[in-house]
Image (tube, rainbow, N blue to C red; front, side, top):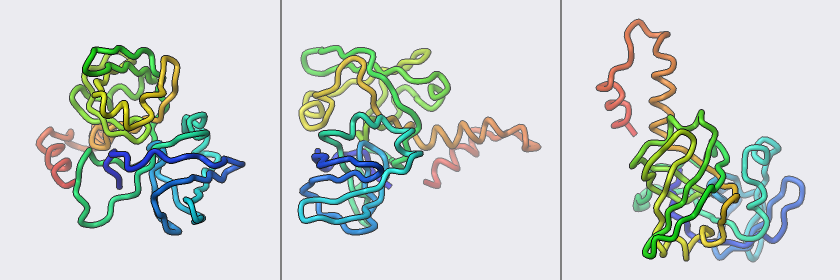
Length: 206
């Protein structure tokens, strides 16, 4: 599990076949789970200046793989007892979004991201979303586009400063929205429909 708070912007040393080698300050151990641009990957090799992970063909098909060439966001998995910030992030990328526009508001930036319409039910106004591993709050949602507002600090400390119109990004929608939507979709298999009280109870268990 992750929080969506980027711990380091690391450097890609090389990406050959399925092996992605990262140069980082973070000292990883074999078998560690690390989110790289939001995707949970397993450390398969430890080097003096970083580590390497393997990306399966399935992962490479689902990720915005062009963003694994120079700099990447990394976040080690949470350890028991860590302070919880951001929101609950699984490191499971749902889809790739495309940046439609970036608007400079002076003290913030509005970023508009387009996604396949089928993912819009999981993108909730004022809810949470993860963009390339960064935990953010959704401002509003339309037919196939949602808007985020990002402060200058986040722009400066993440790869958002390099994004532009047409950039692709990894997106993980809110876990609770996915679970509840899945249960509601399949409620016809139940004798009684899932109630909102039941949904609240399920949500409280996490």
